[in-house]
Amino acid sequence: MTSSIDSAAPKKPFLLPANGKKNTLSGSAPSGNLSLGNYIGAIANWGAMQEEYNCYYMVVDLHSITTKQDPKTLRERSLAFYAQYLACGLDPDKNVIFMQSHVAEHAELAWILNCYTPYGDLTRMTQFKDKSALHSKNINAGLFSYPVLMAADILLYDAHVVPVGDDQKQHLELTRDIAMRFNNELGPTFAVPEPMIPKVGGRIMSLLDPTKKMSKSDANPNNTIFLLDEPKAIEKKFKGATTDSGSEIRYADEKPGVSNLLEIHSTLSGRSIADLETHFAGKMYGHLK
Image (tube, rainbow, N blue to C red; front, top):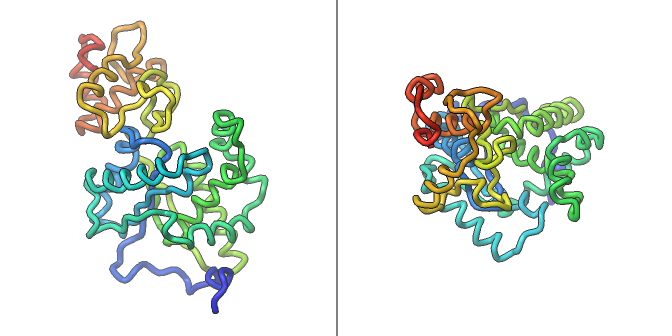
């Protein structure tokens, strides 16, 4: 009988799959309803990758339980995520689409990798600090070691490329460190992944507070466009989006609300930011919304 540690024994030096394509993996946690930020920053890019890569896309339900979840709601939401992946263009004949918790090896490998991850590395993760502040009554070990489970997700499938938002880049850097440390100590075992961060749309911001990321679990639903929102609700949310006291429609650090709307417009329309700035020159914010 093979033990879990045997399954992590060194393999032969890494080679590309037989079809010559590189592997990629990503997923989204069903801790809320899928948002426009999830679509622009992740799912739309996944669809564009399905011809070029061997794609593994998960509903990462194990990650969700680092915050309190109602089991019935989590199951329902997980299935809804799966259906929305398909509705957003992910072809099940070209991609492996699955529930994270249905593959026990994710949790098994996470435990092994925990033993190769320095405590100090995890204390430096900015997302842990941010989420601890938001969930101060439930700061659990799972939240602390969340990046190690993410590393297990990626390394389990020898993913060469991982599409991530810029807020997840630090976690991917940790994954690379874990993979290289493991390979150096036990021999060539894991492919060392590279991040793929979209130049535009990698971090869609909240509609009412454009200094923070749009979140599918935001307490105020008016901050977020959800994929299942009715058209009238979407229109109302955009009309109420924060801009500023000026009137010029341009992309700039001092205009985060306007810049966020331009970025959303650009990624959905395929038009460049510069083209949109020219198009809206001399027009009011209402025209942009």
